[in-house]
Length: 225
Image (cartoon, rainbow, N blue to C red; front, side):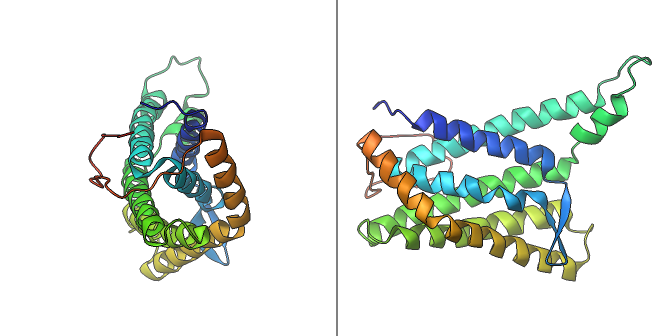
């Protein structure tokens, strides 16, 4: 298997953003008068990283990173829950604080796992297909186009699973639209930076993969050089 210089770093960044999201997703902030998860402020960068990986290394390697991220998130989530609810001696006065911070509502965790996996896979699939269709031209159409679909799936799934029944239906729908549009806006704003990063990574790695004969099965772990 070919050795890459930056794939490990990009994988680590992707996993880091996901683990941070796991413990902060339940924090609700007000955006344009609508309540949204605080993750809308930084989670779009996960999709920018995914775009870079798919554009440079191809769908199969990006899919493997998605799986590694999901596995890391599941392990971390179980540890968070254990930390929150394992019994402590009476003299330890911070038990309630730990339970508050790490006692993540299971539906938020599960919603995050499902949303991230589905959104990442869809994002990477759309970008990989569009790269072949456009013959590698017009990168911005791929990054924004894939984000529209990937972030759309991510946002709808997470909000419906994690917040339905908590927020009124009209507020839930408005929150989904607000979060989705903000994520697309972040992707668009950072398009020049994405162009620069993609160009530099391609130069450093001497790689520019086209998924012309790729197995797009999301459950596969296979990676071909």
